[in-house]
Image 1: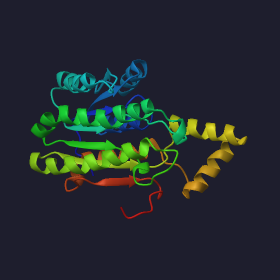
Image 2 (image 1 turned 180 degrees about the horizontal axis):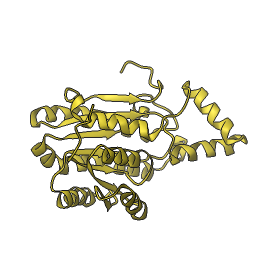
Image 3 (image 1 turned 30 degrees about the vertical axis):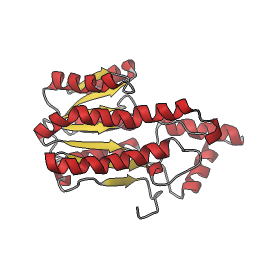
Length: 258
């Protein structure tokens, strides 16, 4: 069965690496034209070149309000319309609460929460005109608080609330708004965390991986491609009755009902 994405246009933020790049790759493979947005121009240009003529690179620091509007405008100017917005950008700082400064909290909300809000606002008229969709990539930590994730947890919780609220507006305007909560995914960020844990404990990296999996009580880490597949599903017609859904793709880490 086809995804129903052929000929449509998407904008994917955080598309220079990891989950964002995998999403862009999957959408292009599904027949979409994709604008890749992130801060790192060299990586974006290289990714767009690998993906071919249906990929367009736009470097931007989405912590800046004007950059969010500019990214939407650039996509519309290049492709002519917009059918899908994937808000994926934003990594928040982890660490002991006492070691986190105000600036760390402001930065975490600026890129992951406020950029999502601004991009949604800027993209809404174009998505409304096309009966389009939004998929927010949030994170399992928004449902399970942790003392070393006091920035990311609240940011993710806020984005879940925002997703539900925009879904209500989407019912009025014909825009579907859903979200994915990834668990621990095999990315450079996860590798960095495991390397830091290995150094702190004086153990090999493989042992740090085993310990982390045991703590999470999951058999393995996820892959960016697995998140990308869910994005493709939510963006297509097979998910036409999904609205305001918060889809956990975390290997079973989230054990609560809500």
